[in-house]
Image 1: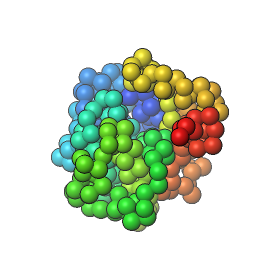
Image 2: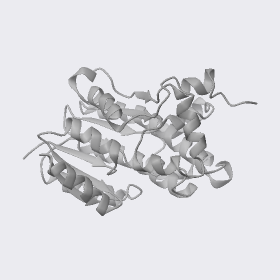
Image 3: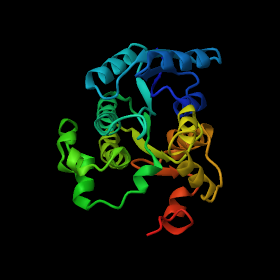
Image 4: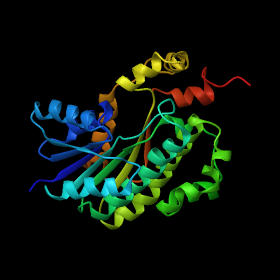
Length: 276
């Protein structure tokens, strides 16, 4: 039996993190597209890792439980890397809320019930959650602590209160961060840690599609006017995950690390500030 890492979302960021810290572990990778999961598994297995691909729908509790049950066949779960989700240009409002908001909350809850002592998790949110005006403390608490099966019934998440897919995505990512805080308290009772990484524009196949799509100029302007002057790489996100999930990060839990080349700083106090 080996320690097991669950990786959800078979993309560049998830793979970069798994390659950085998944050596010696059994890695079970779940993705809505089995083909994507198989592609990542093949690349990693040919580089000496031990990876099994599975089809998994983050918006389904049953599907999440099936993935966890499969992982437990190989040993105890010691790591969770959640890099699954859909973007504002990929999906309608309802799907974004069901996958990114509800699905992430369910995954953190379900893995939190079984992760072994000393285990650690990280979920990937987005800088997007930092662009939205602050919510009231009451709304933040609802996002953090509402029972998962009641989340999508919250008044603030009803269709009439969500402007567009970007707003839905921002709400989902805000919820991810608040959820990580609340779940980290529960995970702590098991002697485990949970954190969140909020990346800015990271070059992936998805991002390249965005650069060439209708909002491409918006994105190119964003990384041109951030202090770093460029987009980031998946391996730079993995650098942060390695800190958060390793012994050097042992005192960090319930936190969000923003890794966006300073785009959020520029949005509030620099050239990216929206003109009134």
